[in-house]
Length: 107
Image 1 (tube, rainbow, N blue to C red):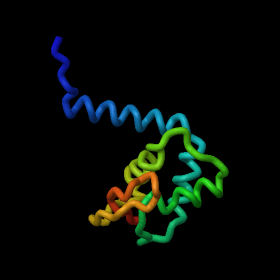
Image 2 (spheres, rainbow, N blue to C red; image 1 turned 60 degrees about the vertical axis):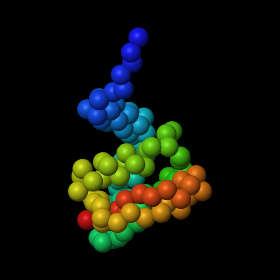
Image 3 (spheres, helix red, strand yellow; image 1 turned 135 degrees about the vertical axis):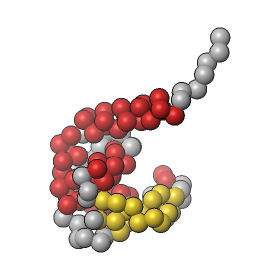
Image 4 (cartoon, helix red, strand yellow; image 1 turned 90 degrees about the vertical axis):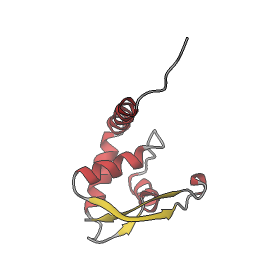
């Protein structure tokens, strides 16, 4: 039996479904995070890792899935709150293993 890998369209559909599920399961915290992102000064640059500890401390909650902050960033971009600077920067959290991510800017 041949098992073919998913097409890119199928992969994107699965990704989008997963993002929607993560946001739905943490909806109240998502709204809180988006509200706090709105309060960032225009021109702020950084990564969601920079905001994560502050948001979790203020709200007293950690989301149920590790992809939550990426999903919130994507939602904030859809709302016109965040965009990309065009720079790739090293992530700082130990669990990120020094990987690179796109730097964000508050629009």
